[in-house]
Amino acid sequence: MKRRSLLTLSLTTIVAVSALASCEPPQPGQNATSSSGKKVLTMITSPEYPPYEYYDTASGERKIVGFDIDIANKIASDLGYELKINESDFNGLIPALQAKRADFVIAGMTPTPERRKNVDFSTVYYEAKNTIIAPKTSNLKTTKDLAGKTVGVQLGSIQEGDAKKIAEKVPGMKIKQLNKVPDLIQEIKAKRIDAAIVEDTVAKGFTDASTDLVFNVIPSEGPSGSAVAFPKGSPLVADFNKVLEKMKASGEIKTLAAKWFATSAPPSPSPSPSGSMSPSPSKAP
Ligand code: ARG
View 1 (tube, helix red, strand yellow):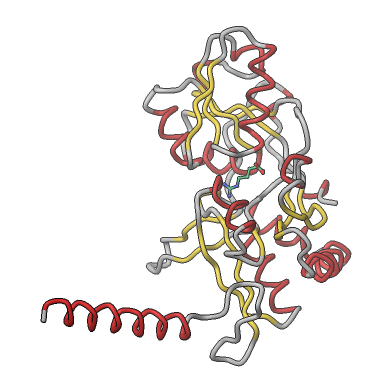
View 2: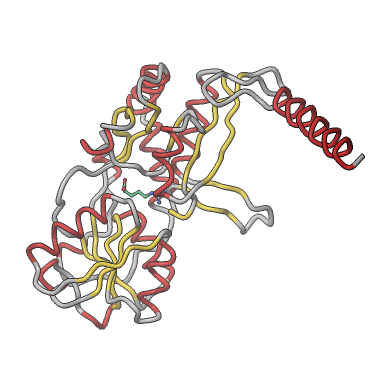
């Protein structure tokens, strides 16, 4: 009797699971269709990176907004897709593409030779520089100043790799990796780390919001800038590049850069010329 009910139960489970499986929406890349009849493109991002992608809570509803999101929306609509946005820690974005859990990543991601082994990239749509963020009073402005200091970086970012290269040249520099950029800022404020390496446009936003912090641009240790990432061999790369080229030629990228990167008040002036506050939208390729 017991055995029969167990059998019935497991049969029911099998039926239920396969029923569920058959209702499962098609995987990204298989062009699921939305209720509006449009094909759906699934992107994945790490929304803790203002002004590229972050949760806008000001409007009352929790919504992912930013420079990258405007670009993704424009590309999707130009190509006739509806856009679905998923999220992950930055470190999980490339694995998500490799597992085909998304059609593309837009996350201020820099195309590096290392990443190119696992994913394909669009052309670069925006250039960036690395900076040191530190308390104003600490005078940590150049990489040499980081000797003996603990420096935070986002786990899996190019800044992590760049910090490792800097640490080879700077005696006693220690590195602390964290998942989210806002956590790096918190750690500096709590004095658990001395500084963080963060890219210029993002650093500007955080230092504008915390006037006790400043940032100073440092020389680049490798590739920089942002591109869209795709699973290897994705047919979307060419389509995205066409729209990106059009957006560059029409000045639309520059307009979006001005909208997202130039809105906040400049942080208090830094005496060093390396403390350039401008994300130089004009340098966008
Ligand atoms: N550009 C850097 C990189 O590719 C950092 C990007 C971080 N993006 C983010 N959404 N947290 O590694």
